[in-house]
Amino acid sequence: MVKNLDFSKLSCDAFIEALASKAPVPGGGGASALVGAIGTALGNMVGSLTLGKQKYADVQEDIIALKEKADALQAEFLSLMQRDAQVFEPLSRAYGMPRGTEEEKAQRARVMAQALKDCCEVPLEIMQACCQAIDLHEEFAQKGTAIAISDVGCGVICCKAALQAASLNVFINTKSMTDRQMAEDYNRKAFDMLEGYTIKADKIFERVAARFHE
Image: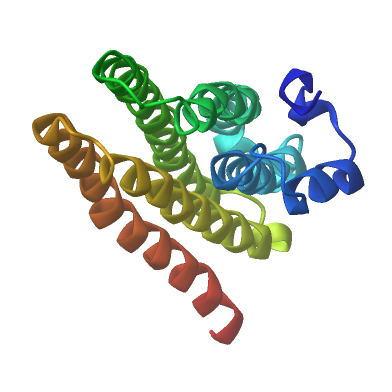
């Protein structure tokens, strides 16, 4: 069954086929996490190409530290791909729960409340990982080898896209919450990350792009 698949282990073809199908998972959250992992890996590649280069001898320790952080983030994104699928399954089932009696309505409401909470927390974690990845790209742009600087620009825009995409998975679920205080708390966290990090990602991209027109 789809829910038992480890989506991070699928081939590109198989993942895209599953994503395009009518199966409830993977969806936008899993796709966001994958794009975040790809973006992070692009920055990490620039770090790999910088290691061992005499021209960048003074930043070798910094690059090693950046790569370790990028490795950890890549693994986190892939884990979040699977977690997003796991938390969405209960929500998809909850929408189909019976609500003919008051008891059934109450049970459905309890299950929905927990499922919506879980389905907000995972994309928020994806967003947080995207913000960390954007921070890493800022340093890769400053310290990485110039021969692959375009990949920093590619990577940071992927991370920005993943950040924005994950936010929509927060907002679609907070819209259905009956606990409006919790919903607004989640919305505020998402908006704060969007406000700060879409701008930061754009600035990094612009600085990278400007280097080709100097």
